[in-house]
Length: 69
Image 1 (spheres, rainbow, N blue to C red):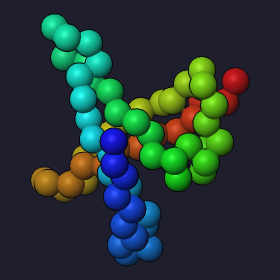
Image 2: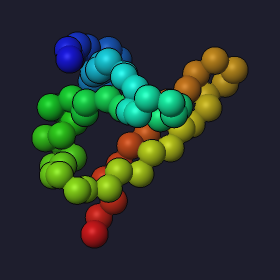
Image 3: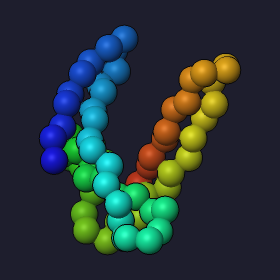
């Protein structure tokens, strides 16, 4: 697994490779980059809330936040 860190327009960009979560399903899995883990103070068992925003005709932004217990 690799992580590429880029900063553009004042934003931190991190990439990680996606793989199959389970053979025979459409579920995917990835590793959360260390910088995101530290920033969100993630621990095993934490729950993440995923959402996506559509910006104009071509832009998409995935938003992830830690669900506070």
